[in-house]
Picture 1 (cartoon, rainbow, N blue to C red):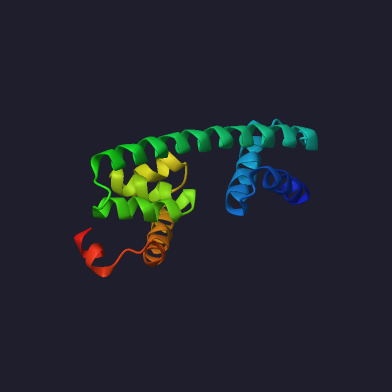
Picture 2 (picture 1 turned 120 degrees about the vertical axis):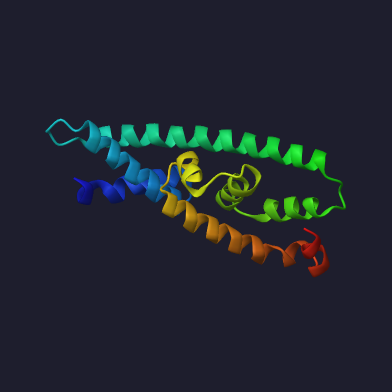
Length: 157
């Protein structure tokens, strides 16, 4: 079943999410759910699509909750820092990152969560959380020069 239907379910998810990495994870979630609820007979493709639709709906709701949390955290951080302070540069750099990178950095540094806790929040393994945090740190470092952050300002931060 997985071999026959995975590409169809992945394409269905990808057209709605427009993020290849997230689409792979969500398509895998669809088959995990189907496997958990499997009762012996082969599931039909429409049922797989219905499960995928529910998984996508959950993803949309999760993204909206994360977006609202990030906005709230950003507003609090801006309120606590002056516009010329290093924190404003950090916020500026964070704004240039992809949502996934920004989120893992915020969980690690603002919320001071462990890799295991980040994994629970993002519904990923601690190892995957470690990889994502490493990649997000690299993206943050690459984004620093684009925001005009100088070496002297970096040392102050």
